[in-house]
Image 1 (cartoon, rainbow over the protein chains, first blue to last red):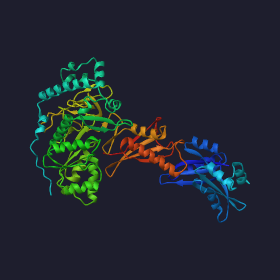
Image 2 (cartoon, chains in turn red, green):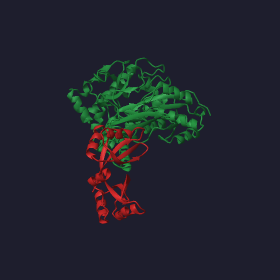
Image 3 (cartoon, each protein chain N blue to C red):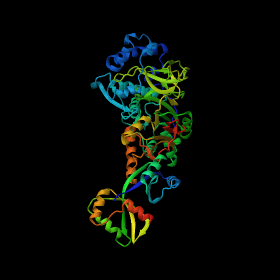
Image 4 (tube, rainbow over the protein chains, first blue to last red):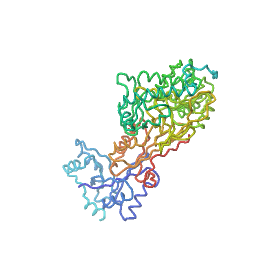
Amino acid sequence: MKLKQLSVFLENKPGALGAPCRLLAKNHINIQTFALADTREFGILRLIVEDTDKARRLLQRHGFAVKVTEVLALEVPDQPGGLVAVLDALDGTGINVEYAYAFTTKSKGHGLLVFRFSNPDGALKALQARKISAVGTKELWQRLKG
Amino acid sequence: MSKNREIPPLHPASAMDFLPLAQLREVQFSRLKDMVQRAYDGVALFHKRMEERKLKPADLHSMDDIVKLPYTVKTDLRDAYPFGLLASPMKDIVRFHASSGTTGKPIVVAYTQEDIADWTRAMVRSFAACGVHAGDVIQNAYGYGLFTGGLGAHYGAEGIGASVVPISGGNTDRQIMILKDFGVTVICCTPSYFLHILDRAAELGVHVKDLPLRTGVFGAEPWTENMRERIEAGSGIKAYDIYGLSEIVGPGVAMECTHQGGPHIFEDMFYPEIIDPKTLEPLPDGAEGELVLTTLCKRAMPMLRYRTRDITSLEPARCACGRTLRRIRRIGRRSDDMLIIRGVNLYPSQIEAALLKVEGTLPHYQIIVDRKKDLDTLEVQVEVTNEALEDTVGALEQLRKRLGHAIEGVTGLRPELKLVAPRTLQRSEGKAKRVLDKRIL
């Protein structure tokens, strides 16, 4: 199951990160997890929120440039070699990990990671072949709320 | 080494600068008739426009009748790209040059052998007017290539019998080394670049005041008396203003004499008029308006009443040097939105064409021009749109580079390209403020 992520363009200057976060807060949208990529001049804020479409519309209406990207949320055993199993599954597929970040929650000895692959569908297939399943939207929210 | 201030005897080519007025008008009119005939016979556009006015070359009876001729504008050159305005067969064309058009394509100009000889003569008269002479060592730091500045100044410099250093633009440290080592006496470049050379020379511990360099022939961009004072005080040279444009010939349309009272137009070759840019009505000498030029000698590409878009006036008073040629007042602004950056003409519409090519739709953008250490800087800020946004830093950097390259491809200038958030660029009354020129000249 793929997950939708919002990427928001930010200028690299003080206060730039606060504006979209405050807007989401005011509208009671919780950020489940996020990651920030930056260069000297600009940054990209990547967000996982429950209602992606609502958040996207809200942000765009307030003048932010927003792109929706497909990512995979993977449960990874919190032990040495946990991440390696994921990477092994992709070996030889030519699929690239563009970036990854984590949810802060942990359950049953598993961490939850967000991966952006160059080919999300191909990655999903390769992972399923190794019995590594991606966490779907519904499941994710249940877990995050439970 | 010291500066030699001796004024040389007049160059024979300068004799035309001093023609008695009645005789000058005769020369002008006889050349005008021939040129109009060539334009009418050889260029479909001019033929059509004259027919529309029921005008034949024979209907011109004196110089005053020039107002009967149709105007030519920059877009005519663009629409004729590349060879539509040639009045001579290709076998007679010996050279092309090009300069910025208003969109993606440059405008092209062409020369016959005779045109090159005329242009060289105009440049010889330009150098002679400010006291340059055979035996001078001229460092020509105008760009060589499609730009008319480099080769135009080069031919004139050789023509007057000087020794030319064809160094072209850029590489400031090398410019300074040659200035010093070759005993250069005359330099040709944009005035802002010379100020930059002076800054750098000071950093390198080179005292330009102690070098033989005594004359600067500065043009290709607007400048001010304030810049002249800075140049002269900082270097001990005399700074002279040269004026020209590719559409007419290149540099050498007008040049200051040693009295530095504004460039004298070589009127026997390039006939000046001043018009009101709104009503297009001719204005008298002394009135400020748009400069319109007619080439009286050109063969490959004659220009009838070309609207330069430069705002100036024709000085009514005779210059103390005795030339009968009228002078133009310093050009400070234009009647269109053209910018001159490091001597290169730039239209905002060229930037638009480049951005449109990359993104498919036109994003909001702003052009910010500034001058740092006497060098013009060009920054283009582009608002990121939802459509253009990429999710990785690498892909956004790629977008930034593609936009920058596209602009460089169209304008020849490499901008500092900055991606900015949507709705951050200033919009005034719904219409975006596209250009912010922060330069103080």
